[in-house]
Structures are given as structure tokens and as C-alpha cells.
Image (cartoon, rainbow, N blue to C red):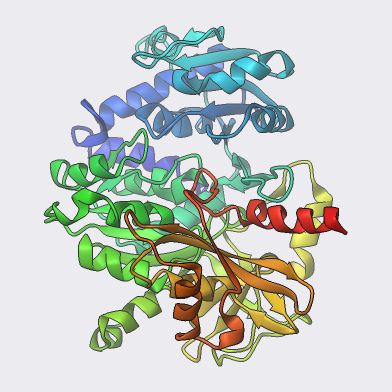
Amino acid sequence: MITTLTPLDWKRRAIKYYPDKIAVIDEEKRFTYKEFGERVDRLSIALYEAGIRQGDHVAVMLPNTHYMLESFYGICQLGAVMVPLNYRLAAEDLNYIINHSDAKMLIVDEEFCGPIEETIDSLKNIKQTVIVSVKNQSTTLEGIDYETFINRVSLEETSLPEVTINENDMLTLNYTSGTTSKPKGVMLTHRGNYMNAANFMFHLNVHHEDVYLHTLPMFHCNGWGGVWALTAVGGTHVCLRKVDPPYILSLFEKEKISLLCGAPTVINMLVNAPEATETNITTRPRMATAGSPPAAALIQKAQEILGLHMTHVYGLTETSPFILYCEWKKEFDKKDEEEQSTIKARQGIELVFNGETKVVRADGTEVAWNGEELGEIVTRGNVVMAGYYKDPETTAEVMRGGWFHTGDLAVTYPDGYIEIRDRAKDMIISGGENISSTELEGILYKHPDVLEVAVIAIPDEKWGEVPKAIVVLKPNANPTEEDLIEYCRSKIARFKAPKAVEFVEALPKTATGKLQKYLLRNQHWHAEKKVN
């Protein structure tokens, strides 16, 4: 009587109980759960007729449209594996991922066909390409139109093939952003996605009446589980082709958005949009943020300016992704807004369904719960990946001792709340003293003239390395380098303050909003090597 744990079963439940409810909103398009289910089933049958079988891999490069949502269900209910692609990657990276993933078919949005056109001749395993047509776009890529592909199927004449899925089978093959090396294929299972989505539902209080805005790229770890969780409760998915702050702010009221997720960079874009102070957001949406440690000042602005109820979550692609969330206690309500924002910036405690997470020393023993001793976050349990695809050596390296090692350095407070201080590679060791780049960034975000900031280590003859702040200023702001250095010195120990500040127009980021600090570091460390 035991049934397989798979998030795909939630589609069945949604169609059974909410057939006439609006499941998906994509600009002017509206689909009920019954209509959505029919489109998904036609996609599955079309894929099967095109030769896709259980265990085959299908690569998908689409923005947050209903086509992307359909692909998650249509591919995976065949027992096939979906390979979500980051449409902002260069042709070289896409070529590597598609070939490495052993994908047999490609579904691609017409707007993003350019890199595929460049590399199609070297995509050795792709047998067929399905193209989602987009108004005012064109491509030389050969393929079949998506609507034509699925509309050839008659549900009255053809039924879904019967497939027996094991919950430990791979559901999706998600590639890391490859910020320091070649992208790695993370094998996520039906069970892991189910348990992560259960965490998403429980800890973000997802319910039947929720209207969820897909601000977070669905290709990024399956939208953190949002692609499954909203369907489970019969909520409404609101698609978003691109992050456009004025449009997002208008959707809050137009569609009565109650829930969304996004990286701190998205929050920053929203609170600094000119329309932010002009928009009356009556729904007061809940928002989960993760991707990089958010500054307390940024969380405070989101709550004050937009009225968002912020929840900080933490995880990695390798953990499906959630392993910590900042649980809010009633006792915190007595603290002032700045103290509350500081607490909300912590990564927090274990989620109910993911397993065990802790901060350990190099010998594997847990650090003291004093908010001071630094260690590495490790985890084990229901949401950890099955491993890296075709890479057993790297898998063994990160999963040593029965724990997945995140590479994130953190402290644990007396109440058990974990707070990241840095990535291991981002910690600055100056004259033997540890300086947290995220701590410095948090301070600089409180400066009224700072829009965005990244702190990195640069070489120093005397100290080995010292902190440098790379800053994007708000419009019409003009503080000097010395102004910002003195500002930091007034807030923290002088040795922790940046020794240099550089003003730039923009910071390099991945498609999911993570700072690519290695690009900034390389400018200094590679130059240093050349001089020497």
C-alpha cells in the first residue's frame, strides 16, 4: 500500500479537486487545472511518440512561462528526466551542459535560440528540437513549433503510457552555475523534490488561495520547489517572462499576488524602483529570499517600503535546495525593526522535512553555540542530491563522512540559529585575522548612497590580503572612497574596514542573482601574478 513519493502526484490531486480553478496566469492567458492538465498530457504523449522513453533526458531552455511549467510535468510524468537550462549562459557553456547531460531532445524559447544556433552542429545527442514561438522573434534553428507538436495529439484517441516510477529515480538534472569551474550536473530525485516542496508548503504557509508570482527562475533548482508546491494545494501560478520591477509591482495589485521568492538582488531592484514608493500594495505578499546572504538593511527596506513579509531561507542546488529557514518567534516581535531585520538575515534552523544540518569544525565535531566559533555547514537527509552526474570523484569529495559539505562558513547562536559569515573561498584572512566579506557588505548596505556592493580580498604586501569594496551607487550619489572607508571604521573594528573602494556601474551576477565574486577577484589576483 506504499505509494511513491513524487511531486507529480500533486497534478492528479489538483485536477481532481480544483478542475475549474485558474491554475496558471501567463500575461493574458488563463488556464484552469483541467486545461493545464490536458496540455501537460498532450506534451507527454507527443514526447513519447517522438521517441522519448523512461530514463531519457530532455533539455529545456525557457523563461518563466506556462510552457516551462508544462515541461516540468509533461517530461517527468513519462519517467524521463528534465534538464532545465539557464538561458543566459554563453553558447560554449550551453554546448557543454547539453552534451554532458546526454539530452536527446531540446525545447527552447525562440528568443533564446541564438546560442543554440551557434552550437547546434556539435550537439551530438539531440534528435529533435521543439521551439516555442514568440511574437516579434525569429530563428534559423530548425525545429517544430511547440503548439503544433502538442496539438497533433488527441487525448480521446491516445492515452498516457503507463510508467512505474521509483521515488529514488532522477526527476531533474540541474546544473550549477559554474562560477569557479565547469558546471556540475546535480541529480535530484522524485523523493528529494517531494520532500523539498513539502518544506516549501509548510514553512512558507502555502495554501489554496495563494497566488504565486514566479519571480525566481524556474530553471534554478526547479523554482526552489515552487513549481510543485503551488500545484499541490491548488494555488495559482503567475508566470513572469523577465524581472521587470515596475511590471512586478503592478502585478502585485492586478493579480493579488500573495507569495513570491527571489534573490536579494531582486529585492534590491524592487525597493529601489521609482514606482516602489508610489505603489499601494494592499496584499502585503510573503516573500522568501535566498541565493546569497541578504543584508539586514535590505530586508528592513523591503518590509518598510513594500510591506513584504520576509522569510530568509537557505540551501543549495545540491540540497533541492532548502535546508534552513529563519523561523520567526513571537518573542522577536518585541524587538525594534533593526533588530528584527538582523535576525531575519540569519539563515536559521532546520526545516521539518529535510533532515539534519549543523556547523562543524575541521574534525567534524559541532562548533559551540556561541555565535562566534566559525565552522562549515554540513547536512544529511531527505533532500540531498543523489550525486553529481558522471562525476563520482567530486561526489565523494563533498559527501565525505556521510555528510554533504556546503563550503559555507557559519556560526551557531545559543538558540540554534545558524548565520553564514562567508563562503570558504570568500573569507578574507588579513594578517592572520578573519574578516567576513558578508559582514562588511551588510554594513555598507546601510549607507544611504549604496545601491549594491561586493567585498573581496585583494593582495597586500604587508598583510597578505586586505578587503576591497566594489560599490554601485544610487543615482545622483557621490560619496568619496574615503567617505565609505570612514563610515565602515565607525561601525566595526578598523582592521576590518575596506582598504580600498572602487565605484562601478554594475556587479557581475549569475542569472539567479548571485554575485560572481571570482570575476572581481581574478582582476586583482591574476594581475598580481603577472607582475610577479
